[in-house]
Length: 344
Image (cartoon, rainbow, N blue to C red; front, side, top):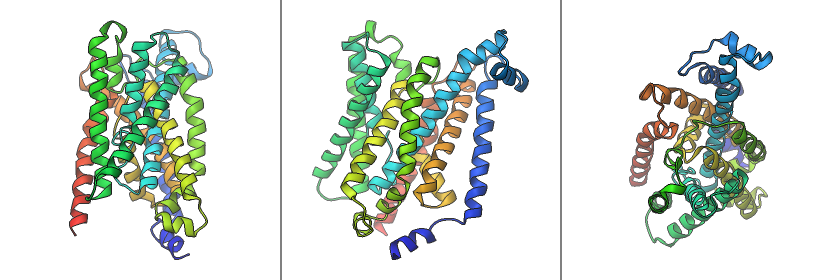
């Protein structure tokens, strides 16, 4: 009971949480509007409303329906998926450096997708998604086993460094496959940087069912995640089946990250940065951290996508490059802070 009481003391007041939720929802709506309206052709709010409620086949409305709306949905769900996957991983491992990108899950899913593209060029989108699941799971297992074999040192830093090393190895393997199979992998290089350009309704129809199922299950794991974040002994003492929860949570993380990589490529750092921002704003109760992470992750990736349209205007920069530009300094900051805390 002391642990639960300690957890509640680290959370913010209900009124503060409600106010922040409303602010983030407003931010998400603004981000959605900017995502649809800004581009090579600026589109007004009235035109957006007509395209959704009363489509008349005009050029601007056709652009909204066929290009910008599916891109909006893909970006929204990918941002939510990666942020929630990162929050679950940080609760699961009690490691502030954990995220699908840092732990090699994104790289494993990417390598599997490229491997399938080379061996089975006619693979369906669903087939690619399941390939990404397997690749992400393989990478996660390798990172965990290898970090466990390293003696001494801080376990959090060992996991992160092992993940970065495996990520580099898998990306090198992916690049090798691309070099020797250029004719079969046209267009893959841009996807590998993390991009939502050119996403259509076919991508939406594959992404959304997996995303909704994964996010709803993740939200249901909120209480268990909060208890796991306090340590295995505390969770067991409060009646949690730790091994089963860990295994099930890992599957949810792989589904959320895998389907996102399959559709939009390996977009990094969303799953690392967003959970830290959310816990700073509303506390450590994962019953609210997870849905807030979904909202804020979607908002931030939408804003990063909007920013990507201006960096090399009139061309577009892959959104993965924007998130890396923003997230890399934050990762270095977290690693240095962890090292300082360890010395203290």
